[in-house]
Length: 74
Image (cartoon, rainbow, N blue to C red; front, side, top):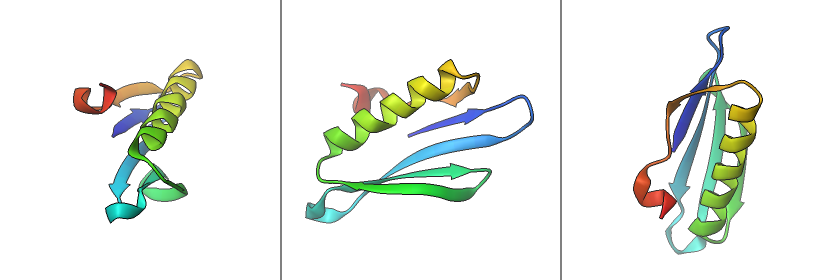
């Protein structure tokens, strides 16, 4: 969904994975290794959380490399 970087060449990314009729999972990776994952009942909840995390991380100094796709934002 999105990817950020810092001046020290660290990267963090967020990916959304559909889980059939059972919602979806949101996974965060830091430098390629998964650091957190959470399951959501609806895609809307997962996208909302991804947007919240994106806002918080960019506010704390992370630089946007790849933004959330427009289709997800609407």
